[in-house]
Image 1 (cartoon, helix red, strand yellow):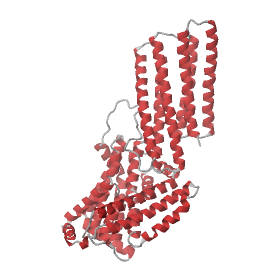
Image 2: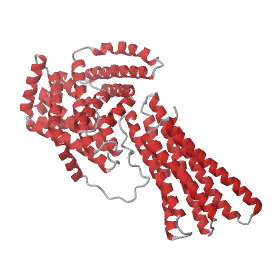
Image 3: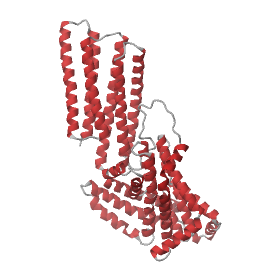
Image 4: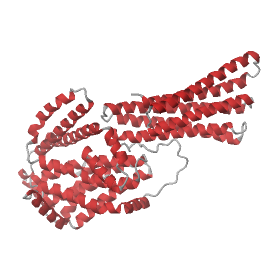
Length: 558
């Protein structure tokens, strides 16, 4: 058997084409589902059974349990779902992913579906030329479906024919005839292969090809499925590395679920395989190894689910014990809901954690303004006032860092093939982050002015203090309304009217103060420094008001 580098690269390219086709299918379906899918994910986690259905549904749509689990990890990290809810979604994902095995087993070997690839691509052309975003997404799905089976067909033809090389085939048979040792060996192959390509579907495809060509017996192909079951945990584990403790627990729970599920299968491996053979023969009238592997995978997932769904609470306790909370210091302006590696496998679903993070960013900005209110109530130059200034200064630095990290996260999402509506949503989020950072800058400038006034021992008049207190109150009310709008994603006309009224009040009061200051200057120019500090504080509050209305307008932009 002559098998050179070109043949090897063709094999690798076939795997890549298969995975790319699956990626296109997944992204096309996600764009079609779009906001509806996000609403399902937000709503269908009220109890373990709703979470279970969510996991099955989403995995069927994205065609990857790893993608679903990475999404779950990021949602736990974002506080969108609890750890207990995430366990149920993960259990469901393991059932949903069995559809991939059935698609490959039913269509990959029973029909010459590769002959339909070009016609399918031709069918997609009208969809791509459509002005409808949803139709273009359907076109993307059809092309992905075609490429998936083109990759599978190419993979089927590019793997070396081991039977034409008696030496290599003899070695393979040697490793196939060691009883339970062979089972463990091929399970390890399935696990390692899945960890390398980070897609269990590729391992399923290879196992099905090997068993269909009779290179390995049915039992060892099933062993590879068991190994892939464990190997698929690597992607969410990597995603959780820089996430919070709850997200790490979710990833660990996924690993434990798959490991425990694999242990009992390995403990009764041969009797279980016999049951699968009988079940396959009963369903299809006769036994074929490829259909048997799909049946093995499905029954394993369903039995695991039937047992584990009742033990969700125990799983939560175990992972909480293995991954205890870490005491941390002030976490203000540190990212809580998104992480560098915690991006969901799909940009469409990553919008939810991004929104949650921006809402948190707005809350922390408001806390900065609370320190300003406290500074005003402290005596000039007091130790407490200086402590508050240092807090605002530290938070402003962290705010700049958080803005950059959120912007980087949004950049990564926008590069993941979003629908047009989601791209528009990303632009809104970019605008909101930019304006929130400007609010933090203005709050810091207010703190600098207050500190400078204290250092210079400058006292405001009673009327100036009253007016400044009123301006602070108006700005505070505008900030509180902004927080409600951002946290609820409120795009109603009523919320916009309230925001505009708040902005008008701030602007009118600033104009009133400016006119009175101009009149005072014509009468008495002795307190120039006092008036400068006073007007700087008023003007900076007015700038905060401008940035607030910009945040709310960004939410309402169509």
